[in-house]
Image (cartoon, rainbow, N blue to C red):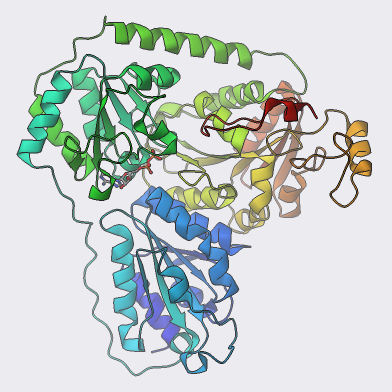
Length: 589
Ligand code: ADP
């Protein structure tokens, strides 16, 4: 057999339905041999976007997303996706070509010791020793990526193994099996149930680990039966519908500050959850973690003795069983009143911002127009739109405005806050929901993929619009264009151009030239769609934005809507997830 065919067959035997990657010698034929076997091959314009797509595909499907790349520089480009997969606990399988083993150490073509490079960062990094061992290496890596806490695995494939012909017996595939899952022991469950029953101010926090684990049913039952309030993390949104009355996302700070017993379901107590520690959390709260990884229990504010290792879906079922009939009688408690007051205050503040009649539109106004229009065009209760969002402000502000009624229809920069993931994610979501059908949520077959991109974030991988066009993916992309990273330099074109003239090779007198966060003034991002056979719109007013959203939603090609928004040149550069922010005076340059 041809080496590339052995590799493609090994992937096929594992049930792999799609490979993301960027072809080049020696791996090109792996993609081609995959195609002969019915495995889709989605080729990108940059390996980074391909590997980000594979990570998101892993999250959406619960099976490793597969990415192939060439050796040397290709491996360095996909490196970006490796810690990204680790940080998010998503299963990823990377297969990279490498120089021939017999040329090792001779400065061969694209030579790099990829195993040494990847070993510290991946769950497993292996190189098959011979053509016979290729299927085993691939299977080991696939299984390792998916079993236990998901993460990245890597297989190095020397060119002589890929391009050689081997007289080997046809390998007999072993059937694919679901990852093994464990439940919690009785004595520990009893302690957790007692703690919940004794709570004055209980809270459930739902993370993306719960979405990954497809734990929506038991978690919905838990909240329904007990009446305990909940808050989702950014990607935990939709495990229980955002519209559920027990959802207190809009009063998150109050919830964390006042809750005394907290069940954290598939979420780490990292920066996203303010470490589970004061000042954001109640210092006396008992924080009970439920996680597939024992390593996580007791981290930061987590209560090690109460926390449980196991599959979140199975363990929540156990808790629901043990709580049988118990309900939190705190609907009129001080905690409930604080939550309600916090929710109403924040919702009123958001509504006020969304109603601001000013041009260029602020983020909130633009998002309000997009949300209202998209909700009219679709049925949010069916979860038939998948939202991708990235960019500091674009992501943070859109999070509370766009609501999710289903799990796994929201993808953002994630635990590593990685920028540049949006286009790869959008392709992954399109593939999982509309091509292979391996993602599932809601009831509709064809989901519309909507990417909400900051202009800086879009710039990382804007060229992937061509990938979307090539594969006829009707993805709708909004670029929130404030001509800068975080914020722009100047609302007026002539002042911006003057600043640019004052900027000599990146140096400038204080205040006279472009800032470090400046981007091109009102760059015409929509042309990237037109270039590739898609459609581009520019929208400056709410009416133009509404019309572009309608046309963009209905289009059968990729669409880029360039939304010109307020540059907010005086916006303080702080970030609620970081403890520190630059001094305020810098904002006034
Ligand atoms: P978020 O970003 O939403 O806060 P994190 O990525 O920090 O979520 O946490 C997700 C957690 O979910 C990880 O600690 C991971 O180990 C865990 N996890 C993944 N799959 C399961 C599962 N089947 N059961 C329980 N926990 C899981």
